[in-house]
Length: 459
Ligand code: F0G
Image (cartoon, rainbow, N blue to C red):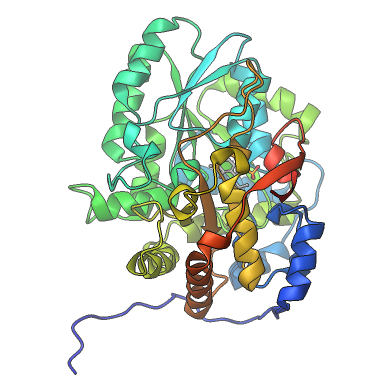
């Protein structure tokens, strides 16, 4: 039979392997009950294929490991800081680098520097830690993402886009009270959905007209750039690296979790262009993170991040990384499993509302589905629905999001296509058995970021 297409393969080969442990159903029943039906509370040793998160779970390259040996662990002025600074200038273009232990460290610092009590921060959907730091600094978050982002079935190519009318309304109604526009690329909670280059540019122009800054969450910006290359007219012949640089040019600074795109196991930074903002941030940095030339990271970790940034914007890397996610998504879609469409950059998001229509949102269908998937095969996923959304700080009521999702997050360069097959087959068997699944009731609710530590029992 003639081949009418050419497959692609990963642009690397495997040098080191880590054994996986396969448990029995009985062992998993015990493990998930002990974990209070919360996949965050499982022990890693009880997990087979770990799709909890793509955060800090990447496989580093031989270059990154070699770089770890070049760690300069000086308290001040570490050589690795300057390598990282170079990488941030070269690939993202910002003037000042403020290193932090991970992304939320940067979110904490920038929120405290820019936000005053009573402010409003508009953004393209929320991320859990980002919004919490904005709220803790005294702001209210206003969602200005396009409506299609809240509809799992909408196949809009850029579901991360900001609705410019919604944004302008917030800017008009709150003069002097909007410290910055918070833009993420890709949008994690919407399903890893990208923002278009044209929209990013328009957001920046609109914000500038109101004298308001734009702060980019650049955590998965290379993945975002790849979608632009694939989907946005006029961008097909541009490299991911070029597109990343241009996206960043439409912002005044960024927060970064180096545990995602930059292929490191720990680390992050804040980067800004404004000298005064940088100075204020460095002042807080020494209080909460560490000295301005390490900010909570070891020298060797800064080196791994610096090298990882360069690797993360290579076209062949991103193509294989997202290609693997698309492979899993296509398979589930062909089998009729309800997932968020189009498939996003860092994982597959199961639509728990459509999957389990008989379980009301007050009984945490996505949480129940994540537990059921673990029970079936030892595949670990994460709830991204009403549990993650938490409570409204003003009313104390649960915030019931339209999206009630389970995220199967794919670590970078870690699993093979066969692992994707096993995962898809497990999702399929849970789908076949869906009528027998029951909801959960919460037995312990932490005050902040409750999804990390909450406990449940079956209804
Ligand atoms: N912004 C986005 C879009 C994220 O996805 C995350 C983390 C952060 C900021 C915070 O970075 O973890 O380094 O402090 N997301 C992880 C996840 C936890 O699983 O999606 P961090």
